[in-house]
Amino acid sequence: MSHPGCSPDRRRSNLTVAASGVMYLEASGISVEPAHTDVTALRDLLLNPNCTATQITTLLRSWPTAS
Image (cartoon, rainbow, N blue to C red):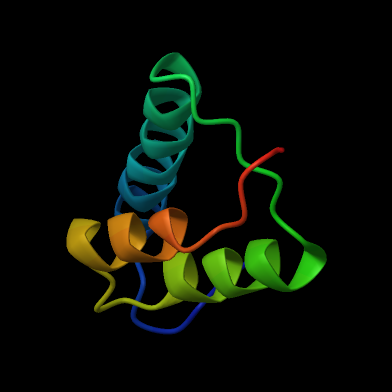
């Protein structure tokens, strides 16, 4: 999927940050159970050429956790 102004390297970097964040949460004993809207919001954020690691972190922290 292409997004104007967002290089493949930038998308790959953003995806790495997001994946690392989810793995960190899991390793810390925090199981996340994102809804479809949560994952869609993450996708949209990762496609934003101005996306930052801080924004990704904030979004991941907002995801619902497993009971």
